Image (cartoon, rainbow, N blue to C red; front, side, top):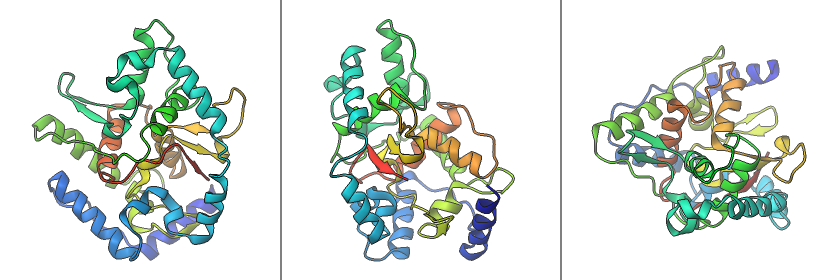
Length: 281
């Protein structure tokens, strides 16, 4: 951890720190967000950002493409499909839950809050008489991975209604993305906007653009345990890990703050094809 703190602090000096963007509409934010990366990484096409760090590094991309020939998440994906069938998930979603992930998360006018795919899956599980699943790892992200797989190739299409409540949720997520936190006083944007493409402890910092395209992900460092679902994790599991790395206390998974962050974060990848589940470091 100490080496991480030293390295990331050095990157802050090199990369500079920008202020939180002025209040703008979601569409204006998206336009500016894309423009920043297009300028920083000329030649990288919009759809390539869905490949994370593999859009920025040719050697790593080659290794990743080799892994995708026989993906390590196949067993977990099959388990996710079986759970999807066993728990009756199809009954709770439009189109039987197939090919719908690109519309998540969404703002629910009835509750006045953002709803994530994980929340709707768990609500369905409970409605069907089963015990609620753990939020960040195990069976829930395996089901989410299967649903993501059925949505591959569909463009992310998160909608922010022009209402006070929806815009407030979006702007709260935006504030969280750019807000400093933890002993290191770091924001999501420090790593994944200003210092994207730079190295920390042998790892390449990915661009914030396209990050949500490949979740749930299968990570090598998470691939411990039994049951076929080891290795999978949700986007909010990753949020918690990032918070820990900058010595900030992680929020609870599916908290309002994390849901709003996911809302903003995913909107910033609108128009990029889903390709989850994917292999990551």
